[in-house]
Figure 1 (spheres, rainbow, N blue to C red):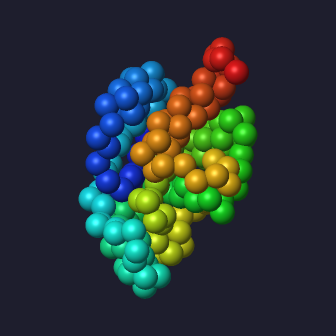
Figure 2: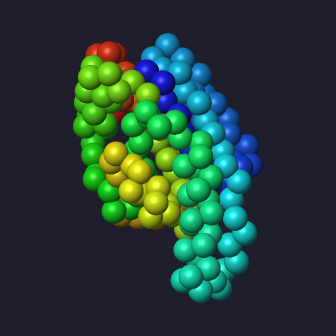
Length: 159
């Protein structure tokens, strides 16, 4: 399986960079993982709704440019479906079984994803109704992908 994780902004926090690198290394026997970062837009605290939409649209255009046309796109969105780890594993297994072994998970910036990118997505996945920092979401996502791969192979992993 080939997995892309597309994100907005550069990850600077060393503890997150190290954690993600560890899980990407662990995923090596299961999948080829590619991390793609696109530049974020400046987003001051007191923007109007129109300005926020412009930021999402610009970031979304960058993300869309990085997506191959044949890739299965999973947008991480707070209004998406909430799955268990077993359900994520089952979905990845089904995609691989039916020839959709190229999957891209997309994490937006601090203002979320553009409506154009959400329309391009094949599905929306939520990790809960709480808002998580998009930088931390990268680590949570890559850990859950690793857990899903272990589940699919019937290998033990802490619960």
